[in-house]
Image 1 (cartoon, helix red, strand yellow):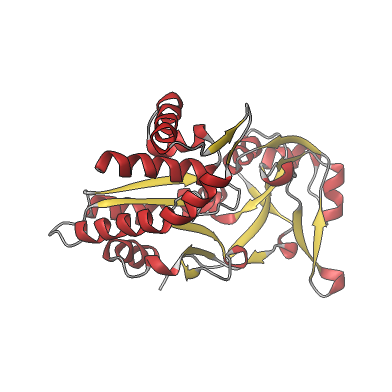
Image 2: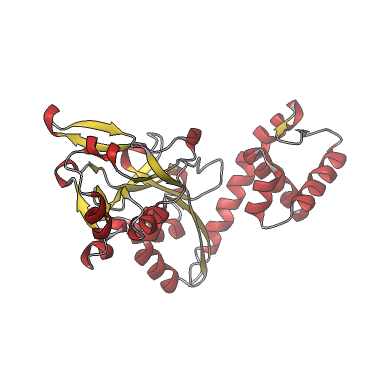
Length: 298
């Protein structure tokens, strides 16, 4: 019976991800082993569960029916087993967290590190990306995003103060190319941008428009370099390659030691702080509450 439950769990994760490679990554196994498990499950049930192409996997009508019938049951069993583990003297289990590079690497790392030391039998799985993850579909316990990006159907708990964005460059760059006095003058400078995974867009820079009652001004300079992670913008600025726009929390040490200078300070934008968010059904878990209490701001 346990083997059948494991096979059904494999089926659920493949259905949720729509991809054998992603499902194999979540389960820590190979794509070929996963494909074999699904093939054997289909043979035992006598129905085809998935339509397979070279690029995608989708449920058949029979697969959709099976998924709708068993997914709530399997999820319920997993939650009950997790709750049993939490009654041990020392908390056990795994917590999967999806957040941005800034939130995990810079804002919450010290708390996460302390949590891991204090609870050695709890495995933390940390994923950083810039896409807005569907934490239910991708089987994360917690997501961490800016407050205005959190879905209304989620419980949200604040984990950071508001985020200040700043524009920076190295002293030597500014000495060579001059210091822009307004955001529009960035068009005459070398700028370092970042491409977001959603729709392959390059992130626009936002500033307060001092001439229009601090309305938000969106700007896309002519970038000489475009990167996929914010820490590369820091490296490029330190190497005197140009001006970049990023959260102040990422470069506080570089500002203190004089390796980077701030410019356009009167136009700086501030955004609501980061929040962790999760489905309401997770709130009753003692293991889960340990992490929430550790990360919350107040």
